[in-house]
Length: 276
Image 1 (cartoon, rainbow, N blue to C red):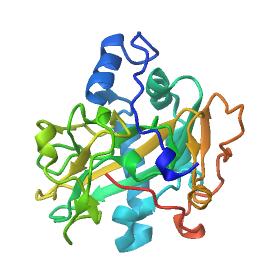
Image 2 (image 1 turned 45 degrees about the vertical axis):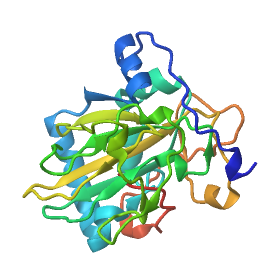
Image 3 (image 1 turned 90 degrees about the horizontal axis):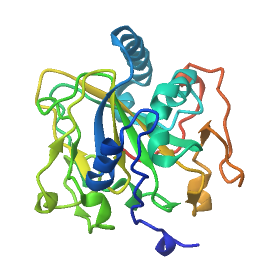
Image 4 (image 1 turned 120 degrees about the vertical axis):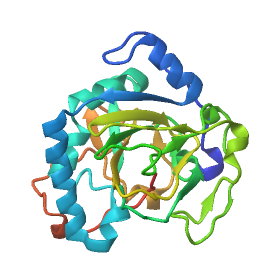
């Protein structure tokens, strides 16, 4: 199988009441490519998570803002969030009862951060087929238009791969989708700390510079059903998956149990697979 064989088509989820999502919310996800907001962590819980992430980012120094990628199988605290039943209940309503968490990223934009994440489609960069990943975005801080919350272009998840072009030095990615607004008006993914959103892997999204005096920090968690396959052996070596719920009868995804480690300096950096 080659990159040309990647299936980037969208498959709608069954529109019925689930564990957490109502039928109309799943219909919204199918039509627009995202659904939000959902309360998951209370004030005290998210405060503990924030303090934990602050420690991880401080330990990594300057690299911590965009460098804590794919530690879900190496850090106990991230493993625990990725397998939290409240999050998985939302994901199950879209991908089904067997759930693989194959990636994560802590993404922090400091006040005055001039970098932007250009418009892009995640799955077009990944070596996975078919495109069935659902990204959960957990707000560690309140996120809104003022402090560079993520933005979506609704409905673009069904358009297939959209051409990209080179981006400037102020961009986190070297390539992005130019003039994405031609596909529709952006939706600001405003979330309160402790809330989550879910979006499809082919939905066009990005975020602008943080021109506010407030930080914007979030955690992305990538989930897919076990039918999804990694087609690049080199890429596969950097993926450390968790069978977060159910199982994988095919054995394609190697499960990593909960690690004992919670010291980010005591482990090497895993594979880097994307930002938001």
